[in-house]
Length: 281
Image (tube, rainbow, N blue to C red; front, side, top):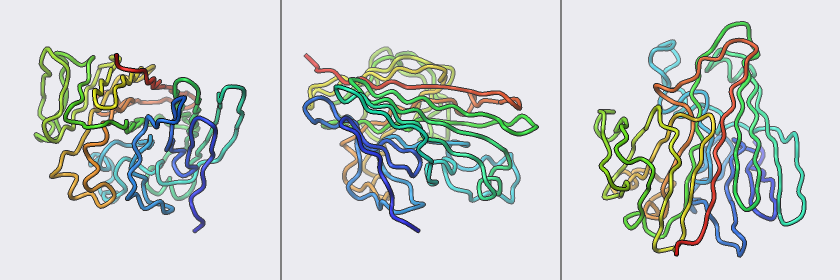
């Protein structure tokens, strides 16, 4: 198998495996995204950091589907496969537009028996915008989950706070997916956090006092928000992360669990996330 390949622009870069954004630079060179130094960067192996694409299922393979297919890769196959570059333009001031696509083949249909076309549009500029579209190219409807699993670089997760989810309900994976209600203040991190907010398209604002910046994540066509940081105990079990866990927060946007999409034949679903980083004054 060949080595991984990247498409690089003046404001960011994308690995063609998974169409995964791995860098997004602000003016001045600061990276907005976290990328683990201990990722393996090998074909077929997920990259820890950047913006992995979750599709067509979230988490483990859905047990309600064919039991013989259990054990398929977590978070689907899209992040492990090479995507084709179908558009690449770069204009003045570092503004770039990249389009990638992934189509079903015999290997994907062995895991998920549907015909589809997935396209990811990546726009680099003062903000990073990602737009994922899924087309049902088969004769039957299918149900899928999709997520932009964004890793945001922070100075110290224990000092960070996320606004926008006050009083909201979530499924808490650290407690068997029991329902959890946020308090009236911003979400903070005192250990492992793994919460899925469904039916919630709130704008999320991450404040990072150590790096003195604010990162705003806006969603379009996305009803789910996932907040994740593994904390020290869980991170110790992740060989491609280790002790780097305090350096990121995941604010993920998409449609999963209760918000999974059922797509009729010939139809398309599109959702997007925009990431903006500004100074914290």
